[in-house]
Length: 222
Image (cartoon, rainbow, N blue to C red; front, side, top):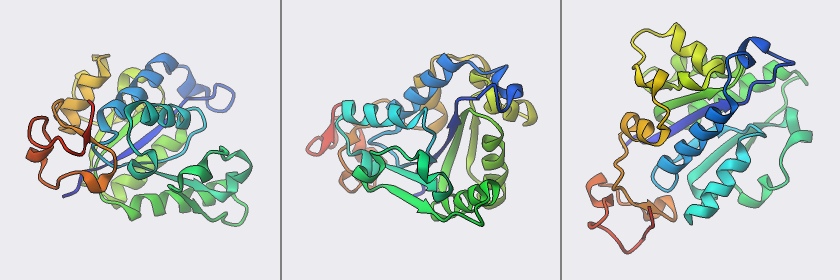
């Protein structure tokens, strides 16, 4: 069963791309990322390309939830940015490093994104804040995995808002519902009663057996 979630997120830099920074709500971006982690971690595999402002949120949340960060999160990074890698990356053994292509930023990012979006099959992709790279990841995802459900969180602004503006039939609650936990439970189809598991291999294949009261021996607290 295809349940892996793709995250494309970032905090816009007004010096680099003021167009996206002008609409970005940094507090909302942080809240939406934290909500996604709360809804997904220990329940679904989460895949993304690391952003230095967001990666620490996921580390801390995983520790607080008592789940194996290295098991539930797959992080992709290009060696073009090797001087910017967080030191803790090596500790978790869950980072796929992609080669530097001709010492060129755009070529290196493209190669990393192609690998990230072909190594996994995604049920949904969540877009939060960010700049032009979020648009690039969306375009590539549409080409490589057109069946993934697209969730641009428009209320956070940034490139995620731009995606929502450019897509027809974006649900209204992606624009105005600031209860991001409830929003993501609904759109990702993850029941509030679903247990978390320390490692992916502990999780029953049958979703019905994951609900509290059904399997309790290996699940962790909600």
